[in-house]
Length: 159
Image 1: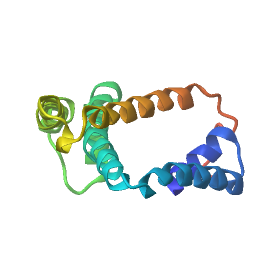
Image 2: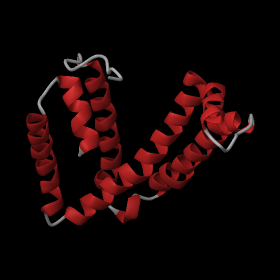
Image 3: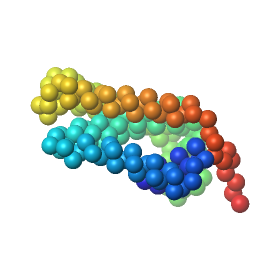
Image 4: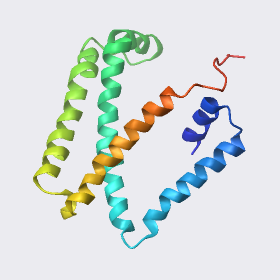
């Protein structure tokens, strides 16, 4: 949970103990659903959401943001300055277009279209709909956490 606890400590200015306690209680409560008789089904649905849709969409968005906002050329120049392996201008096109398009193609045709044609793994429609509810809640929470004012340290010094 280090990837969750440290950012929350910085965001809210909480101690490590308080942050760890809050995260553990929340994770415990969420985990209770997996102990029910339908727990394996929930695990499968959450796995489909996080490990398929979540990772692929996040990867595509990361490529788009880094490629178009930060700048693929800027990243390539930095890579070439700090690495033994040099990358050419083709890297820019991969980062900006090819990789995001490929990932979104898999999401749309390997996931979305397939899940629309027939419910995921033959689950009832309401259960398959939970994939989209989980994604929407996660997206909504990310905007809420972003909007919350930071109370922790605003700058990190190299000292």
